[in-house]
Image 1 (spheres, rainbow, N blue to C red):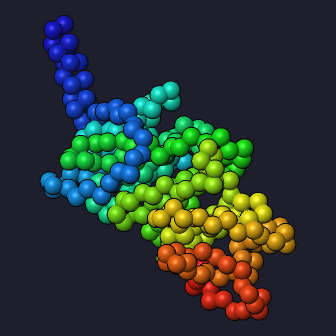
Image 2: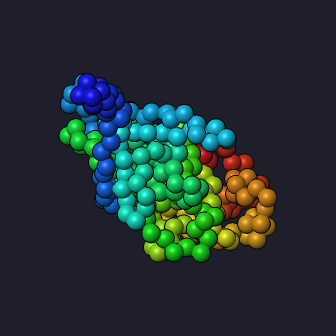
Length: 262
């Protein structure tokens, strides 16, 4: 009997010590102009994104974040504990910071977090800003690609994927995320253009400068607003060096397509 009990104990101990079976729970903090570009002070002191085998008939993959032999779990009360994510990507080349989206079955409105290392310790930062927008469900789209190295998250954050820099995007109304569709950005990638009803809301996420430009009904109601804007508008730089779209004085002016980036 003693031999049997000892064998069971050893089996459980060995299983618990297998890499990736340990789990540490972290409570996220609010984003506060954090630096997510730590360089490892020790070799291999980085995060890992682990693909979990599909568990649904649709074959949807999930991901786990690990540090050394420990799985990172997020407890953001009153939300359920999250240890697997439907979206995960590194946001710096050192792989010490990763953007994740919780797999909670609620679709693209599922919360986003940044898992990062600071002095070799794991931190979790929330990228969720409260919003009371009437059309939040429509305009909370998760990740949108601005360029190969820049993304937008839920119309609220611009993220550079090389150095982990995150910029809050200034809202039209502080109580609600931008109620519009992202069209494109300026060639310097700093000014974002959203079509919001009958206007273009332009915001430079580096400086916080904004410009709201009324759109003619024929443009706003077009089946391809982006193309119509490219034809009728061009970029102009203000006194501070910030680019904003302005209507072309000559509707026949030929605009270089490279002026518009997305």
